[in-house]
Image (cartoon, rainbow, N blue to C red):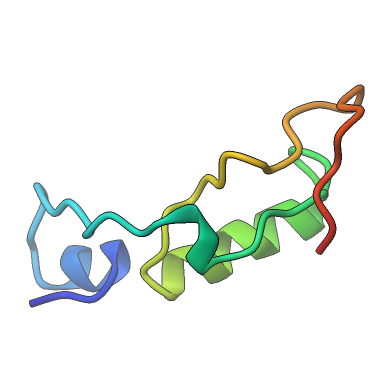
Length: 69
């Protein structure tokens, strides 16, 4: 059983859905969308088998409530 989307792709499993992970099990980020920092965080989440998006991630430049890294 693959542990991440990347593992599933390597195994040729194209309909893989990762197990649900509660948002309190990984940290949100205040990195700006599209920034290298945000892309690094998304890549790390993907490699760790976590969801790409956290409900408290910063979504735009104007977000007034920003998560701490």
